[in-house]
Amino acid sequence: MQLISSVSVGVGGAATIDFTSIPGTYTDLMLVLSARATSTTATITVALNGSSTSFTSIYLNGAAGFAPTSATGTTLVGYASTSSHTASTFGNLSIFIPNYAGSANKTFSVDSVQENNGAASVNTTIFTNLWSNTAAITQVTLSLPNFAQYSSASLYGILKGSGGATVS
Amino acid sequence: MALMKIVVNCETGVTEEIELTPAEVAEVEAAQAQNVIDQAAREAAETAKATAKASAQAKLTALGLTEAEVAALIG
Image (tube, rainbow over all chains, first blue to last red; front, side, top):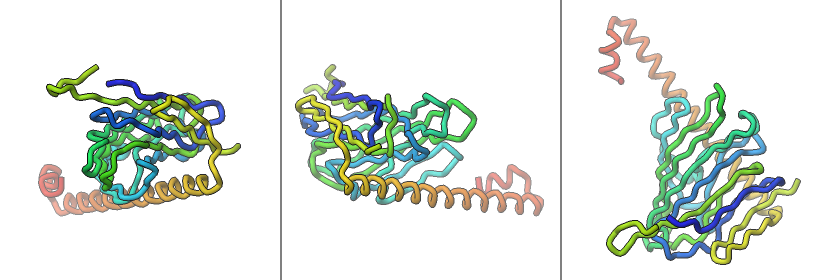
């Protein structure tokens, strides 16, 4: 797994983190995010190649013992810690996108936790997602109004060796 | 404070902080607002389902079923 790019949010915050011109030279992508919101809005959404349409999701949320939930059209991929949570706590998520440069529709999975370090209920969520689009993914955009300072995102590329082994 | 976007060009390695246009601000806010609404609706549906299940369990127990029997029926 090789780091493609990494970014840390500055003092002013940011509404979106946008990885563009992603090279198609890897087998899979892994995006990891550490996030805190400056407001009480926790929902983190994703767009691929600038598109927020044709997404389907099934997810299991451990916050209140919910049953698996399916949702068509949602671009939700997780929950950041918010201004109502314990200071300096950050949620995190990882998005795994296999065969991102292929010509089939794109599936991806997400593990997300919303850290609080306190008693209040928070979301622990796992998603399976489908983006019904056959284009190679060259752009991944994460949105949250508003990523707090020190939130960070790193995009990794995963290479499969010719014999199927992972290349470091 | 103006909303910003961080754009990371993976080809060049250049990172830019760019102020969102009013249209982009509206788009982000609308998407987030819709997600909050959708999430609330899904949670309300799940809560209603859990409440109905608890009610059914209580009624079955009142009829004389044991907890094991209720669990065997509805989990």
